[in-house]
Length: 378
Image (cartoon, rainbow, N blue to C red; front, side, top):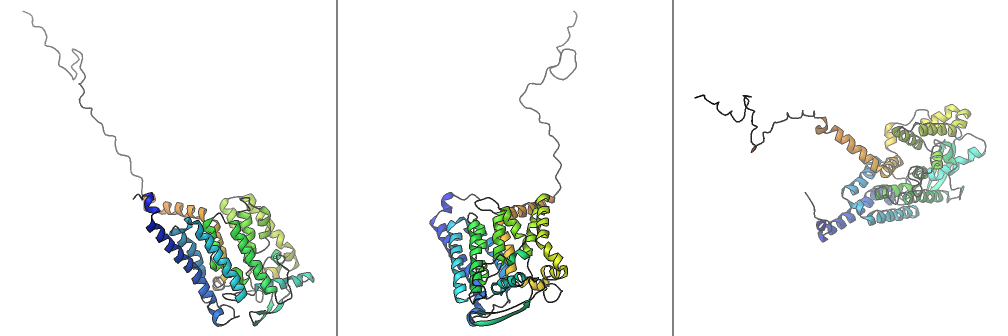
């Protein structure tokens, strides 16, 4: 069915888009903020429970797809206002503690540098941290370092050892998230996916993922369209998710040269610690089990709120190629594509009408006008 251009820009159509705009903006803000802030409202300073992390993660993946399905991506102001609202939510969360306190990383990450500066292996030397978060005292320890070595040094190093260290780290994470939004600003879908309030509240809580996601954005989106290879090299030394993503990315692209470089750089980053204590590195950085070498269960992985930030980032940045791949797979699996190709019909001879039939030569006996009668001798 053809839609007239006037119908698309009619007052009724514009009014309907505004209602969808307001409803989705409110829904995208209200769902994660309400769930994550529920415990913080009734018990200020307490860490938010993990009762609905999987549901929230699935919602974070579904929300940009819903916006795209309703064609609100075409409204340039939608992504801009949503991102601005999320930035506001992030800083309100830091100041008030609403929807905050989801992780101890803002307080633990700056402390992991101390064993290394004292010549001790962070994968074998546990740390003990006591911190005050929104009026509540928390005790952390003993815990070992579980990430890759370079992330220890990607710290703001402002206010370390003071009561403001955690707040500084949270602002640092929010700035990294905001910088990622700036890099994808020309991609409205990526702005909606990465700039939704769920991601804002994760950044406001101080998860260290956003520093690594910023490096990956520089590596695969680039600055002003130019990819930064140095950012990919740094990301390979920070967090295991980045290594897995980069390796899978180059494998799918069948770029074996870059895949080999990524594997070599990954080994180079961890080689000193593998030599220092291979069992400790394997236990902490591979199995993610600092206390007991047992590894993390699947349920534990699903219950980490920040883990969902990675598929959301992948969906936002790589939506166009993922959509193309989805349509190719769907077309290949459709019944029409699997049906056998019918044989072409036999050619039908068409007899031309209105033409004079060919005349045969005398004595030929062929079709056509009969021969004139023979002369009879008298």
